[in-house]
Image (cartoon, rainbow, N blue to C red; front, side):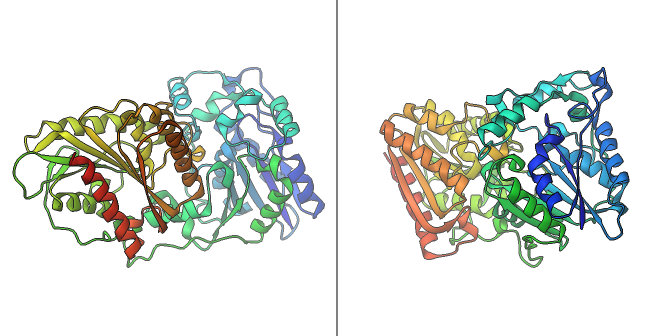
Length: 503
């Protein structure tokens, strides 16, 4: 049997686990729902006495009193913010802990405060500016929980209870960095992902394949994953199913990720699907030009990578085979191919990325080898949100906007995005600007939904959209789906863009 220690997230107390805990107990498991100091447990007179270390101590106290029966393992479950005190406690009692469960939570790192996991970038900034101060973050009103995670599947009565029992979150719990020694690094781990919140095992596997450094540790044999078809509060929406998943996790069940083949490069660094001319680049700052063998000012296509992408990742996006492949292909067709590195390293960085694109366009249009009156912008993946600025106010020199497997509305799992970057809201102002969208048939559902939202808005306002469908292709197909269908899609997309530049 197992001793489950259930640690709640922000604003919530131990009562949030009531139904799930009851089902685990009914099967003979020992269950402790932790009441964190100030958010369900004892509440000191001053909130400034409560910090992350206080909550770690709360969890340690339960660990020290739990699981005394011979052979009974302790499983620590951290939901949302709760994973921070869970990891802090596991680091200090690694010999007592049998497994750690990340329940729709972030991936805390040593030295990083829980503030980094707050989904709203504006709120993160506001709280960061209050570092070193005292106080509390007010609990959400009933209609504001969505700001903190999807409420998909939560019954109205449960949402009422959640709101009624919510308490303010002491600021110091979010601002104090988590300190880890690595003592618990080898403990078995299970991730429980909530699909309606925008996360999935497929997404994590793609991140692993992409080479995301923070995810590589989850490819070990001691790590498993489960999915639940619900939002961010499965203990309220699917309590029985969550109990079953926790029990299976304790037994070591679940899906295991596939580690990248060390002999193969990550998917995004594999060769481009077309043979393209080996045209050298000309680099200026964060911008590269691929110049055609043609005289006179030539039109240009600016290829904008997606993201967020780690600032430490190497090579940087403008050196990825997909971007260099498209740019060389464009140069081989007689136009200037342009790639750039922009600062979309975090969901809050869209304004910075937009600035970088603007700077590249100024540089490119001022170049005497470029026809500054004939420019196309081509966006990829998460860069699709950056289309909004150009849809809202298309300049006369912008002849076409293209996007391949784009994200065209903010994804809940990544957190709130500035309302400026919502292409569906901007497209009614695009006028006659031609749009070319490459849509893949094997897209992740949460991204496919954003494309459909955009296309619906486009039809409603009569926007000039050409859709190039690739039914059997995946997201970022140019280095993984080396098929005639995929090659044809790249050719069709390039022809469409070049036709608009020829006008």
